[in-house]
Length: 139
Image 1 (cartoon, helix red, strand yellow):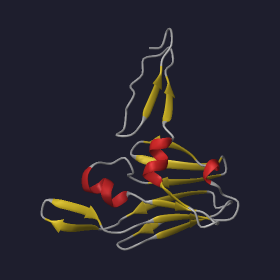
Image 2 (tube, helix red, strand yellow):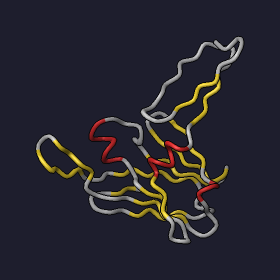
Image 3 (cartoon, helix red, strand yellow):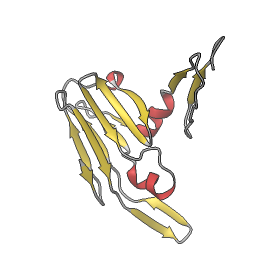
């Protein structure tokens, strides 16, 4: 799915499978030094999808939102930096009951937990709440 300038709404229902959003939004300028994202983009979930059903993971610079093993949404470049990050962001989840959830706040409130193994690993963090668990013989 591709979005452009303006307020985009992406519809997602159970059974839609594994979709990818490539949001190509627009930056507005308050001044030369102060850039803002000038549009508001939303993922609207259909019947049977609730906030407590959503989980997330990171794949390279992409945010993957999973509802179950059969349904997921990948938001391309969610973890990119600078203007790419501002443009790529989708801002809200919206549910059938009309409730909304700010995706950035949801992400911060639900940190990804990464557990180490006995092998040597490289762990990458984000600008959000990350949790790394290490134990005896971890790398």
